[in-house]
Length: 117
Image (cartoon, rainbow, N blue to C red; front, top):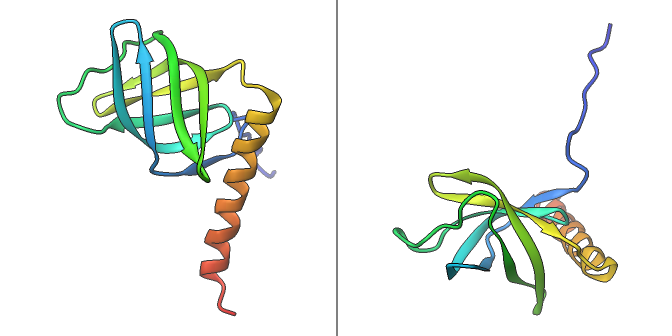
């Protein structure tokens, strides 16, 4: 019998190190992404000792893809010692498409670098 493999994620995720700001009730802070998808992002502290939003904190995040700033409402869904993960909320279809297209372009570029001409 072949074991079934399931993917709990709806969105394609890619490792990416992008400047990422997050503003919540108590603070506004700069972070760096570890990975990004159209559903959210995992981020780490840009500077040690910087404040971190608590689990469940809602705020606005911003990051740049191909020279265009992406802004989104987000909620902290997971905490870690070095950062946290957010889920984007209420992305417009065009913003979601922009993120997905950027991810696929990054994957295509990575594949081209691995395959000799």
